[in-house]
Amino acid sequence: MIGSTRCAVAVISAAIVLCGSTACTSDTEHADGDSRSTEQTNRGEVVSTVPVAQMSTDEATAYLAATARNGVDAYRVVYRTIDTAGAPTTASGLVVLPRTDSHRLRVVTYEHGTLSRKSDAPSVSGASRPDQARTVMFAAAGYAAVAPDYLGLGEGPGFHPYTHAPTEVSASVDLLRAARTIAAREQRDLEPDILVTGFSQGGQAATALSKALQAGEVPGFGLAALAPISGPYDVRNVETPAGLDGRVTPASAVVYFAYWLTSMNRIHHLYDSPTEAFQEPYASKIEELFDGNHNELSIAAALLTTPQQLLTPKFIALSRNPAGPALDAVADTDGTCDWTPRVPVHLYAASGDRSVLYANSEHCLQALHSDKATLLDLGPLDHGSTALVALPQILEVFQQVAPPT
Image 1 (cartoon, rainbow, N blue to C red):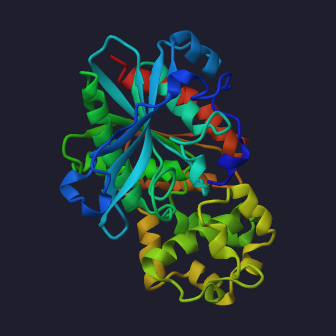
Image 2 (tube, rainbow, N blue to C red; image 1 turned 30 degrees about the vertical axis):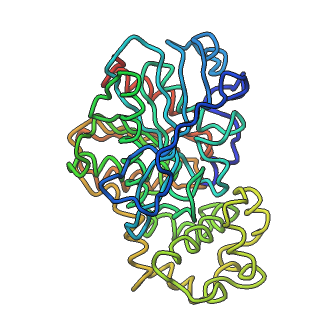
């Protein structure tokens, strides 16, 4: 979650800036452009594509500071999807295709961690953020790699419904559909069974997406393997109590509580006025902080407090024992590990993490209840470092389970 933004270093060192040359300009393609008239049957339809990076093998090697198998072509894709009410909207995401001779590509979906500023999303941000580099890493190994921005981030309209599993899934699924269209334009097909990974919020999104893929809820796609990192899989029983009692660092906890409550209020109407949920001086500025123009560090700087000073007594009690709309909101976040995998699942987390507690992954492993699922303790690492350590290992796992074609 927020620890991902405190580590502004990519999985691997960035040696060149994405879209830093004239090779990354122009070539925007538009459909009719009016998402308001979109029917759900058009979910995944491509609205526009913009090249954001074109790298040779040598350029990809320099960018990743590791040997690349091939060059890549990366695109920002705007596509049709649905919002939290099921109404038509658009979202954006990153699609990276490898420069290989293969006409049929295996796919890796990377789900990003907590972001609050629209311009920090994978399809928009450059080398100062890690998510593009993480996606390019998989494509440079020979996979087609996709990274959804989720709703309300990147070039998506409206607000971001933070840790709202239903729309994390719908935005991810519809980007897969859009990626199939992008690949077809180059006379290439995508393998239907998807390799899924993600970090922090993206770990929770990755388990939600994998649950839907295995359940057959996504016609034309299935699940090949899952490898999430440090996800908040059990907000009700792990992350919220730990945030209130200090086991989660207060600087992180206040951002989580504020982001989650303001997001879920827009869906489930948890309060009429911010003063019902938040104490002053925070209540009067809380909505503005989550307008899509502030990053997590600036939000944390504006909320230099503790959860007990941020939240009203009513909402501290409601956090401990959610009921009514709050319980419905929790259900939209939790439960992403409540399924039994038929494919390999490798969970990664660190017992030293004080942002998203290791117990989240222990509870996820218990819920999956399968000998196909394992949990690796990365040891005394902070939250952001878990992604740095785990993602290269995950690439190796994916290459063993379903190597690039």
